[in-house]
View 1 (tube, rainbow, N blue to C red):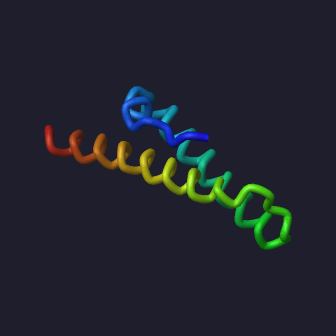
View 2: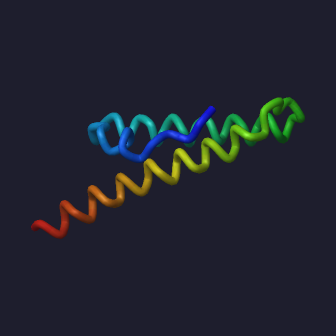
Amino acid sequence: MAFSEVAEVRKLTDSELTEQINGTRRELFDLRFQRATSRLETPHRFRHARVKLAQLLTVQKERSSSATATI
């Protein structure tokens, strides 16, 4: 699984972006739960999920700061 491109994330609408953030946070929760119960088979998914969440949150922050700057 390759990392997603930030350009692809920027194409998302605000509602899609929020859905992706919530989904990624849920995925991280599930991965932590699997690790705690020793059922995690793919530990590399932690890194991918964290990077994806960081990209999503960065784009969301950029949008909110540019919206407040124009006001």
